[in-house]
Amino acid sequence: MPQLTGRTALVTGGGNGLGRAMCRALSDAGGRVIATGRTRSTLDETVAELPSARAETCDVADPDSVAGLARVLADEQISILVNNAGIAGPVAPLTEIDPADWDEVFAANVRGTYLVCRAFLPPMIERGSGDVVNIASVSGKRPLARRTPYCASKTAVLGLTTTLAAEVGPHGIAVNALSPGPVEGPRMDRNFRLEAERTGTTPEQAEEAFVSRAALGRMVTAEEVGSALVAMLGMPGLCAADIDLSAGMVGR
Image 1 (tube, rainbow, N blue to C red):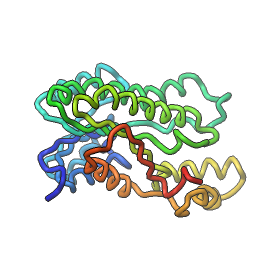
Image 2: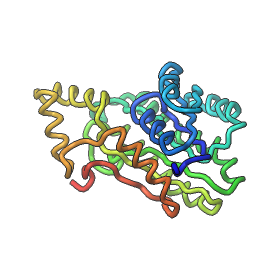
Image 3: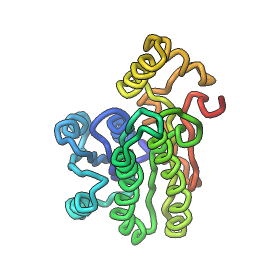
Image 4: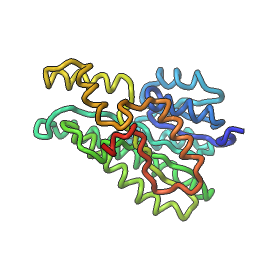
């Protein structure tokens, strides 16, 4: 039997990319999925593929929007919370990054995680059970030049994870982080184009130089991230952990 039968998962940033892949993996494991994000059309595309799924728009960086989402979902018994929503931010030296761009990254990646946890943890605490998985990144643990806002925000998510785990673990709630490495897809294609422009190489050369840092010599896929999420939810003793899924990028 699928291991998540009877459980409902809320996935932020569920409209595309990693979010959509994780929604699909949770549904395949028997869970009911609620996908949320800022763009209704992409959310509708996600839930159209899944049985009994639900889509609701929300800007996780906006306290009023998150509070409104909590009111709309008051009738749902959400026992899995996946904080995936976030943005990549600027690619530039720190000295050239505008404070507004820095704040925008932290609002989406860190404050959004805090606000969603703040809104949806109380019912889990009352029931005495639940799982929270915060999507961090290996970039929060290793150098990535010209990406300081993103890297710093993901380091902050890791700190939030361990501290929150200590707070709510006594209530039966497991809080963990999943840290993907570079994931195949449009975002990394964009990064390779920018790196090629900066270094005077081709996007293919930029990609080859990048993936050579991974032990497996490749990037991970969105589907692999979804499988890792489900596997984490099937490990009852896992709490305050940070799981790397990087094809060996951190170790190199």
